[in-house]
Length: 445
Image 1: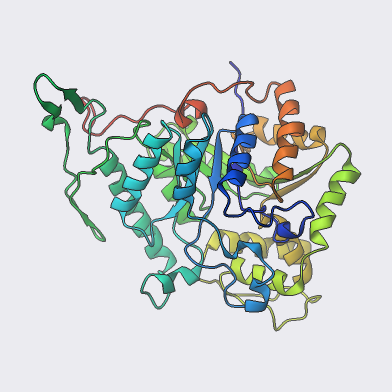
Image 2: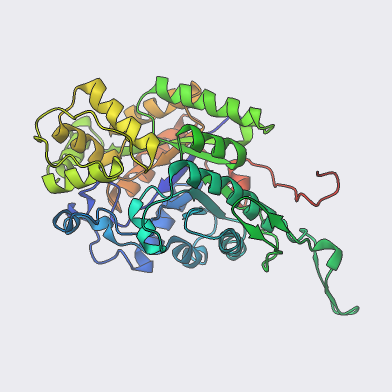
């Protein structure tokens, strides 16, 4: 069978565009309604998506500016693992991915949550490993300031090692359920972790059986050097924001080489750039969909968005129609800061032009066009080592997800680029990834 691309869908309550909630069809009262999220999940499943992805933050976004915050729908959202546990009972095939931070969670909690979700979903759980770019989270966890970037990634490396070790607490066949002998499990197939590290001491074992997938699928989105090292060591799927084929190819080659350098098979790590699609039957109609949202961005919201994406760097004292000034670095997500500032420099953008560009895609690749032109671009990246698939980021919901499923998916299938049925029953099987062997299995180190 020829290589086919993989698709994920990033779901925010009303959509990814900063003005998505102002769309005439936005489901304003549904952001906490399980029926609404079930509708989105079923749409993704109808489109044969590999996974549904819920991002997360443990603090209100844009909280420094109450006036701007009052104009943004992203200030509240449900806790994703809880929501995905409910969706597990309402779906059959689509993978269920939640972001969870290693900075403000303990490894034991993370291991237990995602092992539980993997069991409840019958092998469809995924963990997007994040280190928290939102600096406001620190104040919700007894800290005066955000953990430094290098320390966050040092903690992440150790935390993920612990989580994987806890998932290996039980052998796959540890539970015997033997009524005749009265033995519930084989005690020789239970393993204590006994981790003593720089940042954590975790005894184990985990009080949840080994996940059906061995390890839930591990996803990671950091494109900084430290983020890429974390992904190359642990991730099965790498998210990235790239705006051109050349940049995507350079990132793709770098990640695959880094994965090989870790002694892993590069084919077992899927690179999925994000794309934000505005699709319609004609180019003009697609452009109108984009313009509808762009025209609804309030300047205070645009400035608040840039402040968030630039790690707290404040541009409100500069003229909106003046150039983006030279700025220092911050302690937030560094790869996205660098991408936006590079965009501003290359395009000689004003502050207003930069927030308009960031509002819809936050540095991801925006595609505006017909199903044919959008698939042309996707195919070019896929066939030329720029992507193994794509993280589809609907700019507004539910319509943009439905448009992609109804218009773009059939064109992908017509070209032989995409499945016509799910290949397996677990998330890993559908991605074409192997089942990780326990470190305690015979023949493993």
